[in-house]
Length: 291
Image (cartoon, rainbow, N blue to C red; front, side, top):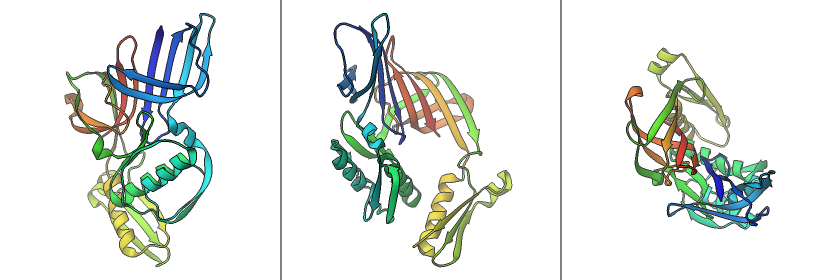
């Protein structure tokens, strides 16, 4: 009776979404009804109905989101002696959500008052702050009804996509227009000092593209370490790649796989930024990845 099923997941960008439609057979879902979706033996989605409707032909359409949908609520939060995982645990307790594997990130976040922000934005800011200060990247996601924090290194798949391996189309782009910096400049406010990091060969090739930040309550060594880390992160062309592939149920946002496309000299591991799986009439997936 099911006419269509689509599952969408994005990396640190809100909740995952399941959209499906079916012919009315007296099964009427209501908002907040629990929806579980399994495919080919794999647990794909556990969430709650947020929209439903029907048309004259009695085809019912449903949109469901995972638990993270509830974390779009705004609040004022004091961050003190917290790590990403301790913040997520507080969030789960507040919204009465089920917590799963919360990787201990180890990095204590700076003391701050997060005012009038969504819980999701607060967590994502913590993930960004941890990345820029440690070089370790984490993702927040719902794993079939359990909220998890995972380091992206945990999520590497033994999978190859590309030439003669599941992929049947792609679009590729390189850019220095967004999040590309070859000169990092940090002002240490309490010391009145500037700490910086630069790549002279990159500046000669692309021109000077500057990142500037003011740090409070930090010392010169901390500012220099952050400048060096930011230079490593941002001193590279931003490449985007979209792939159309046959489906693999293991692929979610945050997972990585090995990409091989000879035409663009691609032969490396790639991180999934977003993915949409379509399950009817055959299982296919559309991916946006980071290179």
